[in-house]
Image (cartoon, rainbow, N blue to C red):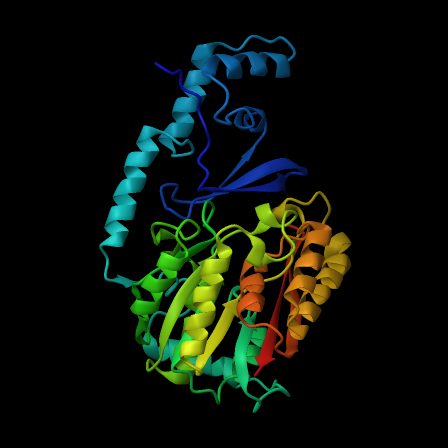
Length: 403
């Protein structure tokens, strides 16, 4: 019988950060087995670095003894720590796999995707939500782009109040549009093993039900075999699409259908291909997306993205104040390529810094440029939000692309 080689779960978000000036890890679990995010710091960090699926308990024991410069660590101590980690669902084990399967099956049987962030990020009561959204459009920040024919829009997915002005600039640019269908691209923050995630579930918001274009979702899933996730659990708590749907429903009611697509990480391919289309398996999926857009001229594309994430909260050793200007320069280089509709230049700029600034909308923007090339774009607004407590910052923008 093969000896157990413990391994950390690959579907939890382990974010490098700092605590009291020292290296730490922030652990989040979108699956929900770990109920609340928590910090790991101190000696346990060295232990976690050894749980890689290639070491046995004996290997971990010996490596810990070396790290402790000869101080003895028993195999029983190692087993005890592993048992504690397993009890809080940190490890890829039978315990975790059983509980995960229960969640996946339970969610797959639901006919709709509930408004996960209602009552958390925005009002749950319909009347209060309408007043909340009214306040975005009451701001005196009309965009000069308004009135032109927008075929695609880039909007933030940051907290609605933090991004208030930029959200308003974005959605005022399309308030005269009348889309029959929306192709909705969002950052899949909990996607790890797949490039995309699709769902056939209709989406519920406090303003009513929004219907997915199930026929096209099925066609896209078939075209994306091998790169599309086999389940749709990534959609359950994802905000990057949910926030966009609030504005779309506020502006257009529920008379449009939409195609919800979460984009996973393209980072592993960044240095190996000259453009996103060259990523293995992506050509066929992009071709299906292009066919979908040609089928109905009134399809509007929305990408819910944020840009640079800098500072200790996002794994940098320097505070955001030292990185902010160079991150802004990089953002502007990427947005310049977007506004020219130049996907190869966009990819080249991202490759040059190897996504050093953690642009979490990279895959969304790359996908948008591949299926919507050579469109003239207009930068409507751009901001940095700074979190003083962590000395970190996030940038975001509004961009309209013209037919």
